Length: 286
Image (cartoon, one colour):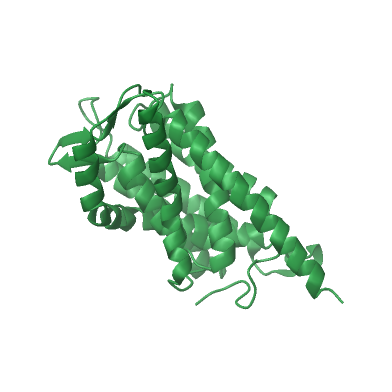
């Protein structure tokens, strides 16, 4: 088990001299980003739809595991570290973003912003454990790279806010090509998606710092993809019946309701995290 700081709640940045002496840091990042880009581009090129229509699901599977390939290359070829961690009670906090969005969705439905089918919502929540577990199987492909390798690597050399900015930009750039190709989400929803990325990176950054584990982020990512991205839909074969229906600008992971909700959640938790961490460091100082 690789942990940056197994006894404390936060992984503090290294001082500059120590960071400079860390063996192979540049090589680790080179292998990591090289692996991500090569697998990403190779997957898109190899699985490009011949008829110019919608891509197969294999494209997304390959793309989602590109960060894992990059992390493994950095680990094997350059001595990088993948912070696996333990599945402690912190993993349950991974459900908080999706649960908070559900509450906001219910409020919006009550205000008449969109329609709620209560029977579909009940069915969606009943099968949510299975759908979330299924989504986690693909989300782990990203999270081994993002929160298993990249976040700890950056976090050792930068404070929480700068680390969040770096990882957030990388994660955003990773999604944008598929959005611009029209394969994922919509270009018109990109502003809301960007806001959601910021909030999500802040929230799971706190979970990763506190748990020293990538598993809370896997559950958070899987739950988001399973229920928020589908507007809490019941899926039967190729048929998707969302419990919340209405304007696309408001609903789903490219909608403003989820985006603003997770931004507020992530910012609030991040401010609590950095403030309490600073207080704890001050108390431990001689």
